[in-house]
Image (cartoon, rainbow, N blue to C red):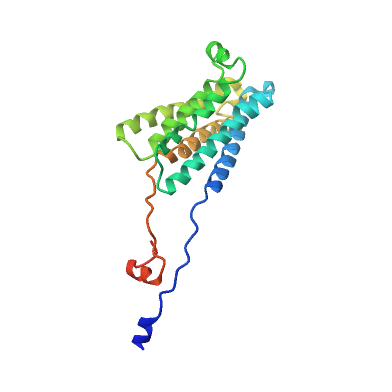
Length: 222
């Protein structure tokens, strides 16, 4: 009986499919669009009835860069899960799209210099890059702590801004004020978390057992 068992060929195990590049980019892009739509709501609440939705100011300057940022971070997650690639950590700069796109609009640079309009987009880009590095778990602790403090100050400022611009209606003592403040706060935090992806350690990839023999030798599936 034992001789018969020894002659039985090992049974191949099913191999789980690898991560899909297209799926990662698509999920990242859709998530970025959802994030951008929420950010646009935050902006609209601060301005109130004077808020104007347009193809340029809303779609091209807010939603498009948010979708691009999400897609790039989705790509980064795919690369991270598959061992990384040369220079793949440059995708940590993906949030720069949030700052650059609004500045490409006509008159945006002048408005930034003279009125400070567009500074919020730059703040979000800084939160993404700096906050992402702080949460990545890589690099010197002091540098990550410094970036975390700066990102935290910016996020706090974004959460407190609606009360200063919107007046009593958006004061933190009102339900609407708390809602808008949390919208800004969570927008900054989720961006920092997502932006940490290209700065995290890459997943090491290696051969996996394909037979029952490999299962028994390793004591389980790798």
